[in-house]
Length: 121
Image (tube, rainbow, N blue to C red):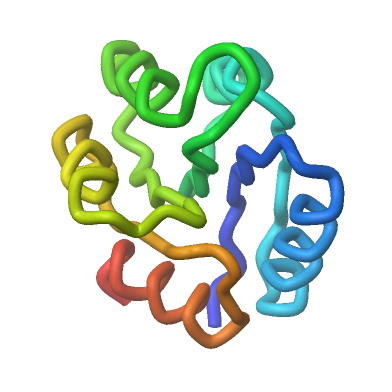
């Protein structure tokens, strides 16, 4: 399996550790952004194979952060990560151009399945 460079946008310290460890175990390099401002800075300074975006963030939320990333003409696929899997939440994610949706909590197999599906591997 090819190692990917992933940007994980998650404000909760414990979830950052759990999710980055899970992705690391899958063989991926993980860069963490604790909020939308850090994420926007990261995508301007580096390139990523995939972005995993929490929806509830301090300041700018994950939907608006995605909108701003897309406005920068950055084509990196973005997967939403949320504890709320209501249809209107999913619709809002796909409306701004997110490529996938994962409900928290998730496990390693589901994470890898979604990564493979979004990247068509």
